[in-house]
Length: 152
Image (cartoon, rainbow, N blue to C red; front, side, top):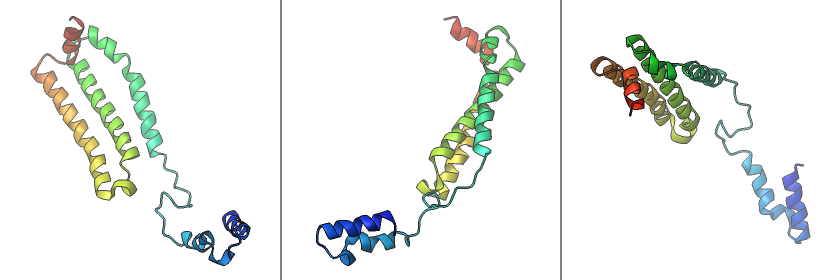
């Protein structure tokens, strides 16, 4: 006999109540028959290393990107502008994707909204890349913009 029914029976005896009509005793068998969500069940969750790999890639990208920001102040040109635009877009995608994967789960919001959340990461990153490329080709470019901001 598990601990909860034992406590219920002993508590019912202490209160001089018939243990067979104790609410906890009656409800203890019902709780195991209620269907549970996959995330709340007692089954072990499958081990998926994809989020861990994405997190490592994002952190490596962040560390590799650290020298680019100071270098952008001194090195001007389309290659540096393109590297900054692509790197920022990948960084935005990975960060947004991890947030939506962690917080927009299907059992909380349903499959449709979870898929929309994950797709929004792609749309947001493509929009970011398009805006940065437009700025690079039709305006002064990212590196020149950094220099102009730091010259203020």
